[in-house]
Length: 302
Image 1: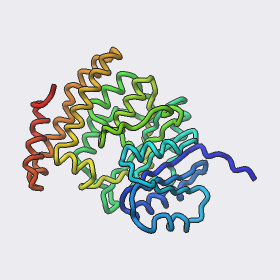
Image 2 (image 1 turned 180 degrees about the horizontal axis):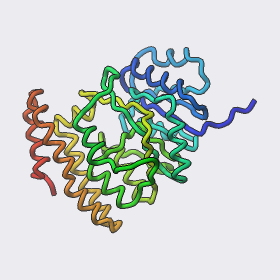
Image 3 (image 1 turned 90 degrees about the vertical axis):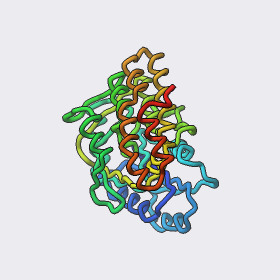
Image 4 (image 1 turned 180 degrees about the vertical axis):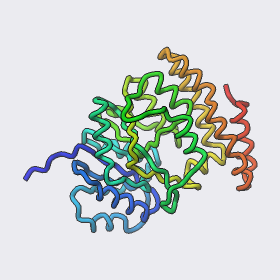
Protein backbone atom coordinates (compact mmCIF):
# COMPACT_ATOMS: atom_id res chain seq x y z
CA UNK A 1 0.00 0.00 0.00
CA UNK A 2 1.37 3.41 -1.06
CA UNK A 3 1.03 6.13 1.58
CA UNK A 4 0.19 9.58 0.24
CA UNK A 5 2.86 12.21 0.85
CA UNK A 6 1.89 14.68 3.59
CA UNK A 7 0.94 18.21 2.62
CA UNK A 8 2.36 19.66 5.85
CA UNK A 9 5.70 19.03 7.51
CA UNK A 10 5.53 20.03 11.17
CA UNK A 11 9.12 20.41 12.34
CA UNK A 12 10.07 20.83 15.99
CA UNK A 13 13.63 21.89 16.85
CA UNK A 14 14.17 20.72 20.44
CA UNK A 15 16.68 21.79 23.09
CA UNK A 16 14.96 21.93 26.45
CA UNK A 17 12.21 20.64 28.70
CA UNK A 18 11.13 17.14 27.68
CA UNK A 19 7.80 17.37 29.52
CA UNK A 20 6.82 20.42 27.49
CA UNK A 21 8.07 18.71 24.32
CA UNK A 22 5.80 15.75 25.02
CA UNK A 23 2.84 18.11 25.46
CA UNK A 24 3.69 19.76 22.12
CA UNK A 25 3.82 16.38 20.39
CA UNK A 26 0.49 15.31 21.89
CA UNK A 27 -1.09 18.53 20.62
CA UNK A 28 0.00 17.65 17.08
CA UNK A 29 -1.31 14.09 17.44
CA UNK A 30 -4.69 15.63 18.40
CA UNK A 31 -5.06 17.62 15.16
CA UNK A 32 -8.51 17.11 13.68
CA UNK A 33 -7.30 16.83 10.07
CA UNK A 34 -4.73 14.59 8.41
CA UNK A 35 -2.11 15.27 5.77
CA UNK A 36 0.75 16.03 8.17
CA UNK A 37 4.05 14.55 9.32
CA UNK A 38 5.80 15.49 12.55
CA UNK A 39 9.60 15.59 12.74
CA UNK A 40 11.47 16.40 15.96
CA UNK A 41 15.14 17.34 15.66
CA UNK A 42 16.81 17.13 19.07
CA UNK A 43 19.75 19.47 19.63
CA UNK A 44 19.98 18.63 23.33
CA UNK A 45 21.39 15.82 25.42
CA UNK A 46 18.50 14.86 27.73
CA UNK A 47 18.26 11.10 28.27
CA UNK A 48 15.27 8.99 27.32
CA UNK A 49 13.84 11.28 24.63
CA UNK A 50 14.43 8.89 21.75
CA UNK A 51 12.96 6.01 23.73
CA UNK A 52 9.79 8.02 24.40
CA UNK A 53 9.32 8.65 20.70
CA UNK A 54 9.97 5.01 19.85
CA UNK A 55 7.23 4.11 22.32
CA UNK A 56 4.69 6.20 20.41
CA UNK A 57 4.68 3.69 17.56
CA UNK A 58 3.25 6.29 15.17
CA UNK A 59 4.55 6.23 11.59
CA UNK A 60 3.63 9.91 11.18
CA UNK A 61 6.23 10.90 13.78
CA UNK A 62 9.99 11.00 13.17
CA UNK A 63 12.73 11.70 15.73
CA UNK A 64 16.35 12.64 15.07
CA UNK A 65 19.11 13.62 17.50
CA UNK A 66 21.94 15.78 16.16
CA UNK A 67 25.37 14.15 16.63
CA UNK A 68 26.65 17.54 17.80
CA UNK A 69 24.99 20.71 19.03
CA UNK A 70 24.10 23.01 16.13
CA UNK A 71 22.73 26.00 18.07
CA UNK A 72 19.40 27.70 17.43
CA UNK A 73 19.86 28.85 13.82
CA UNK A 74 21.78 25.70 12.92
CA UNK A 75 19.00 23.47 14.21
CA UNK A 76 16.36 25.54 12.41
CA UNK A 77 18.30 25.03 9.20
CA UNK A 78 18.66 21.31 9.85
CA UNK A 79 14.88 21.13 10.21
CA UNK A 80 14.38 22.86 6.88
CA UNK A 81 16.68 20.35 5.21
CA UNK A 82 14.29 17.58 6.27
CA UNK A 83 11.17 19.28 4.85
CA UNK A 84 9.80 18.05 1.53
CA UNK A 85 6.06 18.60 1.96
CA UNK A 86 4.29 21.51 0.25
CA UNK A 87 4.11 23.51 3.49
CA UNK A 88 6.18 23.57 6.64
CA UNK A 89 5.69 24.73 10.23
CA UNK A 90 8.69 25.32 12.55
CA UNK A 91 6.85 24.82 15.81
CA UNK A 92 8.38 25.65 19.17
CA UNK A 93 9.16 22.60 21.31
CA UNK A 94 7.09 24.05 24.17
CA UNK A 95 4.18 25.44 22.14
CA UNK A 96 0.79 23.85 21.50
CA UNK A 97 -1.26 23.40 18.35
CA UNK A 98 -5.01 23.47 18.77
CA UNK A 99 -6.96 20.68 17.01
CA UNK A 100 -8.13 23.04 14.25
CA UNK A 101 -4.71 24.53 13.40
CA UNK A 102 -4.37 22.99 9.94
CA UNK A 103 -8.00 23.69 9.11
CA UNK A 104 -7.47 27.41 9.84
CA UNK A 105 -4.26 27.46 7.82
CA UNK A 106 -5.86 25.73 4.84
CA UNK A 107 -8.74 28.24 4.85
CA UNK A 108 -6.21 31.08 4.73
CA UNK A 109 -4.30 29.42 1.88
CA UNK A 110 -7.49 29.10 -0.13
CA UNK A 111 -8.33 32.74 0.54
CA UNK A 112 -4.85 33.99 -0.42
CA UNK A 113 -3.53 31.63 -3.13
CA UNK A 114 0.23 31.53 -3.38
CA UNK A 115 0.85 33.04 0.07
CA UNK A 116 4.34 32.20 1.31
CA UNK A 117 3.37 32.59 4.98
CA UNK A 118 0.22 32.20 7.07
CA UNK A 119 -0.02 33.85 10.49
CA UNK A 120 -2.96 32.30 12.35
CA UNK A 121 -4.56 33.59 15.52
CA UNK A 122 -2.42 32.97 18.61
CA UNK A 123 -3.07 32.68 22.34
CA UNK A 124 -0.11 33.52 24.57
CA UNK A 125 0.39 31.23 27.55
CA UNK A 126 2.88 31.20 30.40
CA UNK A 127 5.17 28.50 31.74
CA UNK A 128 2.18 27.00 33.59
CA UNK A 129 0.07 26.77 30.43
CA UNK A 130 -2.40 29.43 31.53
CA UNK A 131 -3.22 32.48 29.41
CA UNK A 132 -0.57 35.13 29.99
CA UNK A 133 -0.54 38.86 29.40
CA UNK A 134 2.54 40.98 28.86
CA UNK A 135 3.25 44.51 27.72
CA UNK A 136 5.04 43.17 24.64
CA UNK A 137 2.02 41.13 23.54
CA UNK A 138 -0.40 43.99 24.22
CA UNK A 139 1.72 46.27 22.03
CA UNK A 140 1.86 43.62 19.32
CA UNK A 141 -1.90 43.26 19.18
CA UNK A 142 -3.08 46.82 19.77
CA UNK A 143 -0.43 48.90 18.04
CA UNK A 144 1.70 46.92 15.60
CA UNK A 145 -0.61 44.27 14.14
CA UNK A 146 -2.67 45.63 11.22
CA UNK A 147 -6.40 46.01 11.68
CA UNK A 148 -8.07 43.11 9.94
CA UNK A 149 -11.24 41.13 9.62
CA UNK A 150 -11.14 37.78 7.90
CA UNK A 151 -8.26 36.92 5.59
CA UNK A 152 -6.20 39.74 4.15
CA UNK A 153 -3.03 39.42 2.05
CA UNK A 154 -0.15 41.65 3.09
CA UNK A 155 3.10 42.29 1.26
CA UNK A 156 5.52 44.79 -0.22
CA UNK A 157 6.72 47.91 1.51
CA UNK A 158 3.50 48.17 3.55
CA UNK A 159 4.28 44.89 5.29
CA UNK A 160 7.99 45.70 5.65
CA UNK A 161 7.17 49.01 7.38
CA UNK A 162 4.68 47.28 9.67
CA UNK A 163 7.16 44.61 10.77
CA UNK A 164 10.09 47.01 11.14
CA UNK A 165 7.95 49.25 13.31
CA UNK A 166 7.28 46.27 15.58
CA UNK A 167 7.41 42.55 14.78
CA UNK A 168 3.85 41.42 15.54
CA UNK A 169 4.30 37.89 14.15
CA UNK A 170 4.53 34.75 16.29
CA UNK A 171 7.20 32.84 14.40
CA UNK A 172 6.57 29.29 15.76
CA UNK A 173 2.92 29.48 14.69
CA UNK A 174 3.59 30.49 11.07
CA UNK A 175 2.98 28.05 8.24
CA UNK A 176 5.44 28.56 5.36
CA UNK A 177 5.31 27.53 1.70
CA UNK A 178 8.28 25.21 1.46
CA UNK A 179 9.45 26.22 -2.01
CA UNK A 180 9.57 29.88 -0.90
CA UNK A 181 12.22 28.84 1.64
CA UNK A 182 14.27 26.91 -0.92
CA UNK A 183 17.82 28.24 -1.02
CA UNK A 184 17.27 30.37 2.08
CA UNK A 185 18.51 29.85 5.61
CA UNK A 186 18.34 31.31 9.08
CA UNK A 187 21.35 33.52 9.65
CA UNK A 188 23.96 32.07 11.99
CA UNK A 189 25.12 35.56 13.00
CA UNK A 190 21.72 36.35 14.56
CA UNK A 191 20.74 34.73 17.85
CA UNK A 192 17.29 36.23 18.51
CA UNK A 193 16.04 38.19 15.49
CA UNK A 194 16.75 35.59 12.78
CA UNK A 195 13.03 34.95 12.22
CA UNK A 196 12.34 38.59 11.30
CA UNK A 197 15.36 38.57 8.99
CA UNK A 198 13.95 35.60 7.08
CA UNK A 199 10.45 37.09 6.85
CA UNK A 200 11.80 40.39 5.49
CA UNK A 201 13.91 38.50 2.98
CA UNK A 202 10.75 36.86 1.67
CA UNK A 203 8.83 40.15 1.65
CA UNK A 204 11.66 41.83 -0.30
CA UNK A 205 11.44 38.98 -2.83
CA UNK A 206 7.75 39.77 -3.44
CA UNK A 207 6.16 37.07 -1.28
CA UNK A 208 2.89 37.67 0.57
CA UNK A 209 1.65 36.94 4.08
CA UNK A 210 -1.90 35.74 4.81
CA UNK A 211 -3.35 36.57 8.23
CA UNK A 212 -6.13 34.51 9.84
CA UNK A 213 -8.17 35.70 12.81
CA UNK A 214 -9.17 32.37 14.38
CA UNK A 215 -7.04 31.41 17.37
CA UNK A 216 -5.58 27.93 16.81
CA UNK A 217 -2.11 28.01 18.40
CA UNK A 218 -0.77 28.58 21.91
CA UNK A 219 2.58 30.34 22.07
CA UNK A 220 4.43 29.82 25.34
CA UNK A 221 6.24 32.88 26.66
CA UNK A 222 8.81 32.24 29.39
CA UNK A 223 9.96 35.04 31.66
CA UNK A 224 13.50 33.63 31.63
CA UNK A 225 13.72 32.64 27.95
CA UNK A 226 16.91 33.00 25.91
CA UNK A 227 15.62 36.20 24.33
CA UNK A 228 14.68 37.61 27.74
CA UNK A 229 18.10 36.80 29.17
CA UNK A 230 19.81 38.43 26.20
CA UNK A 231 17.54 41.43 26.51
CA UNK A 232 18.38 41.97 30.17
CA UNK A 233 22.10 41.80 29.37
CA UNK A 234 21.64 44.22 26.48
CA UNK A 235 23.06 41.70 23.98
CA UNK A 236 19.73 41.34 22.20
CA UNK A 237 19.62 45.04 21.42
CA UNK A 238 23.21 45.14 20.19
CA UNK A 239 22.11 42.52 17.66
CA UNK A 240 18.91 44.46 16.94
CA UNK A 241 20.77 47.70 16.27
CA UNK A 242 23.10 46.01 13.81
CA UNK A 243 20.21 44.29 12.07
CA UNK A 244 18.04 47.41 11.76
CA UNK A 245 20.83 49.55 10.33
CA UNK A 246 21.82 46.82 7.89
CA UNK A 247 18.17 46.37 6.87
CA UNK A 248 17.74 50.11 6.35
CA UNK A 249 20.45 50.01 3.70
CA UNK A 250 18.78 47.04 2.01
CA UNK A 251 15.39 48.78 2.01
CA UNK A 252 16.94 51.89 0.44
CA UNK A 253 18.44 49.77 -2.34
CA UNK A 254 14.95 48.40 -3.03
CA UNK A 255 13.59 51.94 -3.22
CA UNK A 256 11.51 51.34 -0.08
CA UNK A 257 12.60 54.54 1.61
CA UNK A 258 9.75 54.65 4.15
CA UNK A 259 10.75 51.16 5.33
CA UNK A 260 14.38 52.25 5.46
CA UNK A 261 13.51 55.24 7.65
CA UNK A 262 11.45 53.02 9.95
CA UNK A 263 14.38 50.62 10.30
CA UNK A 264 16.85 53.41 11.07
CA UNK A 265 14.59 54.84 13.75
CA UNK A 266 13.50 51.42 15.20
CA UNK A 267 11.53 53.50 17.67
CA UNK A 268 9.47 50.72 19.28
CA UNK A 269 12.49 48.51 19.73
CA UNK A 270 14.16 51.36 21.61
CA UNK A 271 11.06 51.90 23.75
CA UNK A 272 10.98 48.19 24.48
CA UNK A 273 14.57 48.38 25.69
CA UNK A 274 13.68 51.30 27.94
CA UNK A 275 10.77 49.34 29.44
CA UNK A 276 13.20 46.58 30.47
CA UNK A 277 15.52 48.82 32.48
CA UNK A 278 13.65 48.35 35.82
CA UNK A 279 13.75 44.56 35.40
CA UNK A 280 17.49 44.62 34.73
CA UNK A 281 18.04 46.68 37.88
CA UNK A 282 15.82 44.39 39.97
CA UNK A 283 17.89 41.42 38.83
CA UNK A 284 21.15 43.12 39.74
CA UNK A 285 22.22 43.90 36.17
CA UNK A 286 23.30 47.57 36.24
CA UNK A 287 25.60 46.95 33.27
CA UNK A 288 22.66 45.58 31.29
CA UNK A 289 20.47 48.50 32.36
CA UNK A 290 23.11 50.95 31.16
CA UNK A 291 23.29 49.21 27.80
CA UNK A 292 19.50 49.25 27.48
CA UNK A 293 19.42 52.98 28.19
CA UNK A 294 22.14 53.67 25.62
CA UNK A 295 20.21 51.72 23.01
CA UNK A 296 16.90 53.42 23.89
CA UNK A 297 18.45 56.87 23.55
CA UNK A 298 20.13 55.98 20.28
CA UNK A 299 23.50 56.82 21.81
CA UNK A 300 25.32 54.06 19.94
CA UNK A 301 23.63 54.34 16.56
CA UNK A 302 25.87 54.75 13.56
